[in-house]
Each structure stands twice: as C-alpha cells, then as structure tokens.
Image 1 (cartoon, helix red, strand yellow):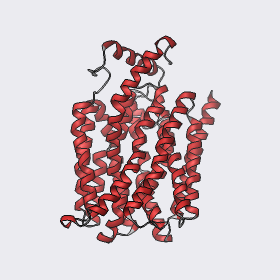
Image 2 (cartoon, helix red, strand yellow; image 1 turned 90 degrees about the vertical axis):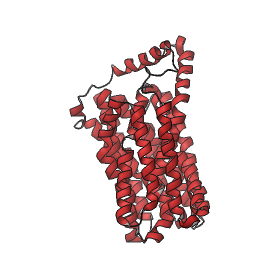
Image 3 (cartoon, one colour; image 1 turned 30 degrees about the horizontal axis):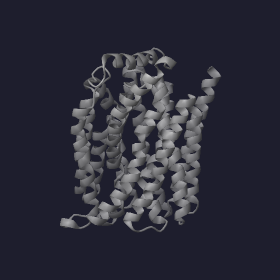
Image 4 (spheres, helix red, strand yellow; image 1 turned 30 degrees about the vertical axis):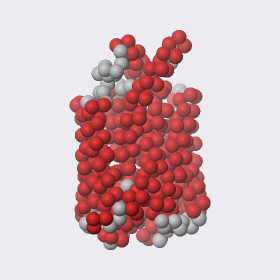
Length: 430
C-alpha cells in the first residue's frame, strides 16, 4: 500500500536513512562473497598450468561449490530465521573467508574439489538470507530498486575484482615462493573474515531492535510491512517445497543464473581468447561489462518500481542478455565484438536476476519465505555447477568457447520465455 501524500516526505526521508544504514554495508559483504566465489576464474589463468588441470577438471571444481551450496541452503536460511540474521550472517562470512584463503593450499584435483565443496557449504544461506533480511525492512513497492542496489555488488565485484585479481597475480607471483594464484586466494579471503566480525557489531536483527530508530519511526516502518503481510499467501512450511509457483520461480532463476556464472567463470578466458594476454589488462577489460551492468541494474530497478510492472522488465532484460551472448560468440577473435556482446549480456542478465526476486518476495511470507527463498536460490545456483561444467566440457570437445556461449544464450532466452508464460497465465486467471 502506498504512503499518503501528507506523510510522503517524512517516509521518503526515513527509508533513505534505512537504505543508507543497511545497503552500503550489505553491499560490501556481498561484494566480498561474490569475489571469493568467482576469483577462481582468474586463478585459473595460472592454476591450470601449475597444477596440470584440464578445462573439464577446472569446470567441475568451479561448479562443485554449488553442490555444497545446494545441500545446505534451506537449512541455513531456516537457522537464520531462528537465531537471527546478525549472528548467522557473521558465521557465514567468517567461515567462508577462512576457507577461501585455504584455497591457496590446493595441490591436486582432490583438494581442489574438497575445498570448493566446503566453500559452498560455508557460504550457503548468505544471499537468500540477505534477501529475506531486506523483507524485514522494505515493503514490496520499494524492493525492486533496493535489491538492485544490493546486487550491484555482483557487478562491482567485477569492476573491482578484475583489475585487483590481475594485479595481485602479476605483482605477487613468486614472492616468498608463493604463486600468484595462491596470493590471490589468501589476500581476497581475509576481508570476509574482518567483515564477519564487523557484522556482529553493526547489523540489527529487525526494525524492533534498531536502536538508531525512534519508537515512532519503528511503528511507521512496521505498519507498512504489516499491511503487505496481510495480502501475501500464507503457505505452511511443509507445502512450500511442493508449491507450483515456487518451482516456476526456481526454474526461471536456474536459467538466468546459468548466464551469470557463464560470465563470472569464463570472462577472463573470453578476453584472453580475443588476444589480451597481459593479466592486468585482462582485469581492466573484465571490469567494463560489470560497470555497465551496475548502472543498468539500478535504472531497470527504478523503472520497475516506478511503474509497478515486473514481468516485462524481466522478460526484456533476459532477451537482451540472450542477444549479448549470441553476439559475443559470433567473432571470438575480435576483442571489440566479444567485449560488446558480453557487456550487453552482463547488463541484461544482472538486471533480470535482481528483478526476478521481486516475484517470490511478493508471494511468500514468514517461515515459508525463509524456506521458499532459500529453495529458489539453491535450485537456481545449481546452474553454477552445470554452467561451468558444461562450458568447460564443450570447450574441451570443440576447442572453442563459442558453443558454450550459444548454450548460455539459449538458457537466458528460455528464462525470458518462462516469465512470459507466467505473465500470460497470471493475466488469464485475472
């Protein structure tokens, strides 16, 4: 329900204050999380030759993270609701930071697979936990831009992470007898541990526990959430896992995330295949798609909130991304065409993913929301296992990334088609 005109300036100022309190900190946490998850894509540029890994071994190791992530996602989110976001998010960050740094000790296929799996177990619940946490503060009509702002951390991790990872691997390589890729894992894991400790001191579990809000401000924020809560589906926890809407949301998210991890794990290799061999230059060029995507996500999120329309914003973003993947595969030897295509794909897929969360968060509430959001995210992130494994296998078989990029284009186009079907069914029922 929209706020009345009389209270609009005060409400806007209050929500701006809440946004500035929460989003920058959560943004930095997610930036570190995503960087620790995908920095193996940069480490690959040295790891494969040092450890004699094939593309298939790399793809399996990059993807096995999501097996652990999948198995522990729902239990983790249910525990978050039980023990509180502050303690549980801190636990997640500290353990994943330690395990990310321990990746420097990978010496063969087994240790690579085991540590990537454990990293997935440690991080399980972070992203859906934050999505759930944001529903404790922001009503549905504000959530499009808020989730987009939070998820720009994925894009900014590419802007910051590409040049940073390239610089670390180039400048630290061989120092104290440690390879550049080992320094990469060590140095990029430490900030997550520090932020985990900071989480215990900074975050509040809910509006009620926020000491930086007055009682009147708490009541105002809570009133808007209570109004929204009354309109949501109240599904028993046991039935969430059989709800057709949750499965449709999961399938859409799976197809979208196929593209996200196609970019995250293979972008440095796409740029290298186009003739850029300098690691630092590779990192700088890797930042371009993510920088454009960060701007696109916020603009699309604002447009969706302003109009109140979700479905077509997601559909168009997904189909734009599909076109971008197709374009990048047409002439992989041209850095201009390859980078332009991946930039378009990045902007489209990240805009579609951030907005896709507005659908289940508008549908679910309470414990069902904790379980449902985690289920959608865990099933969706299984594509993080499927995507790099398939692309790696296709590259080994064909000797080129083009086939894998065509596959990613089809996946994203399929996600857009599923959202279109969901839209048509919704309007038919109406």
